[in-house]
Length: 164
Length: 366
Image (tube, rainbow over all chains, first blue to last red; front, side, top):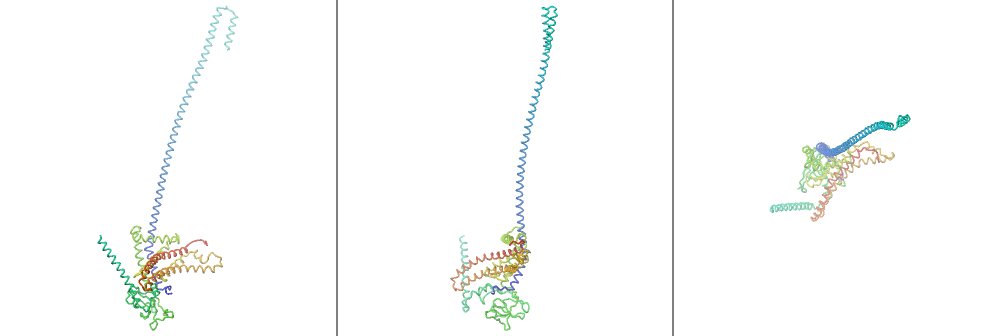
């Protein structure tokens, strides 16, 4: 029974000592210790976060570079393509122009030939008429005297040929 | 080389024989003491209770009149006001025979308690041997109070330099701090945070840490079997009562609306209130009561087991039983070392749990 009977003296001293301990340790031990631990944890966390951020930055930078490179590559391809197109166009144009010119020249030649042909035809026709007349005159001179009938006939023929 | 090893061996043997000699001597003297008081047979119960209970003087060594002990101050609040004197004035009398007269008050000591002497300067016992005399208010510095001061000084000597070393080392724990910091962090991360919650735990950290280390160091002091340690402070009901009261006061003063609502307006049909409210109120009392009993019983039980095993030697009155006793004592002592930390942990954990239940903000869910 004595064991489980609390004595007032020990309760008093325990309360007093515990309160003093609570106050003194709380102020001079637990608070600095806990804040030091907390500070360290915070700095570790910060460092970890900074490392993570740096890693992300580097990754971003790498991907940016990659993107830039890709863009440059695309640009290059585009330029080459455009140049090829332009060259093609130029060649096409030159060819077109050449063929057009050739056609024009051909056309001109054809026109000239036609004109020449026409004039030659007319000349031939006149020459033929003249020749025919001369031949006829000669024939008539030799074979015919002034024969009105023949004269009329010739005239008629001539008319016919002219009409042709 | 060989020579130094030889001297070391010789030193070792010297030490060993010294220890053996001491051992035989102490057992011899103890048995001599029991022999001398042949009339009074060896009473293990009395011995154990004497060692487990509080005392007004700190026994260091020796038996009877030859014993050496540290007298401790006796502080009494009597009918005549404050009375103080050293316990040595009782001349080691614990049977209520030696009367000390101070400030006109006659006092005597019986089984480590101070009583007023009656007009004849004697002690009246009832049929069961319990004193009938009145007692003054006893605020003496007893063996346990002495141990209390010692533990408080040790705690201050350990933790204040540890805490101040952080500033010196730019927040890096070195030396003793490296050993103490994990313990502090353990209390914070394994006891306070999970049980009280992230938002409120910091406010209760000083109490939990102080209680944890205070109980632990006193448990350990109780296990060391010689002066100035060995007091059974944490196995004293007054001590555990006080600490349990601290937890109870903190718990109830930090109780939120939902905590009190749980007690006075439990989520049951209102006709059940007549049963539920008393049950909940008993819960308020029983929580710290369990804390008090658990620590007291565990530590006292450990001391009683060890003392019983030692008593076996004197019960069987043969030295042959000594190796068995010593072996078992060593075994129990190792377990007690674990129990010392475990009980400090459990007390702190349950305190945190009770506080956590009181500060919890939640909707009724059961």
